[in-house]
Amino acid sequence: MNSKIKESFLYRLDPRTKMLLLLVFIIVGCMIMDPFVTLGLLVLAYILYRTTGFSRRQIWGLTKPLLLAFFLFFILTFPFAKPLPGETIYFYLLPGNHVAVTASAVLSGLASAIRFVFFIWTADLITSVTPTGDIVLTMNKAKMPPEASIAIGIAFSYIPVLKNEIGTVIEAQKSRGASFESKNPFKKIQAYIPVIVPGLFISIVKGREIARAIEARGFTYDPTHRTYRKDIHLVAKDFLVMFLAVLFAVVVSYFHSKRGWFGTTFIWNLLTK
Image (cartoon, rainbow, N blue to C red; front, side, top):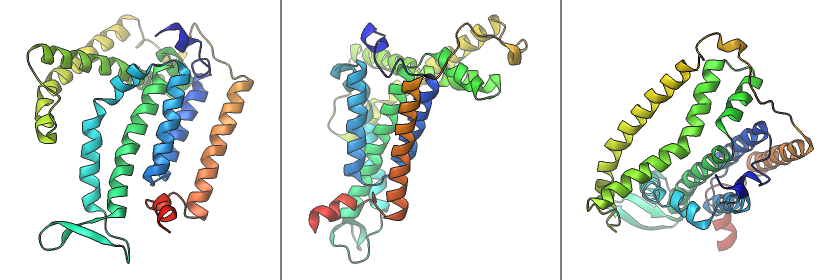
């Protein structure tokens, strides 16, 4: 992690504040179904990445492996969206008037795909700027069982590690002549199959190494009364960020539940009226 990231505003926030931010992003992302508004959330996440110190190359390195999943989320979502009452049906994908292609169906698929990328971005951002020890300490401050807190902390911290390991596997496969740049989505899926098996194997090996390291450090001996070298304290900027995050979630929730905003065709209806 470079010094610019460690000096950023987001990195210096209390880990409890960052966990609350992640929770708010997830809740808001689940409430918003409109792809254009969801794209706005993605832009917000991109701004947070850049202001935190991540380069465009690093963000693209995270996003590139997600493009296949983006396509799959779109393909597996929009065929199951039922046309709205009175909505124009452009054409049918299958004979016999099956799988109607409508504006709401396409927008639903796009929203699902963009939301997936948004969730991965926010989870990666928060875990990248939060040391594992801070995550564990946050869980303990919340009176969670120490076994659960260490497990969740390791899971969060392992996301960037797994990302780098998968990237290493992909580079190794490329050096052996494998191609991942096919425009055919089905061939692209098939090309990633040789990455899955080594990825699973690496995860199992890393899990065993982590288990041995935890046991060697005596974590299994009276974990409830363990002490920690570092302590965490909320300061004014943490309370301000928490307030703004909760306010943002409350405002979105109000307009979503009381006004019916942020549905799948929310912006589309405004543009086509």
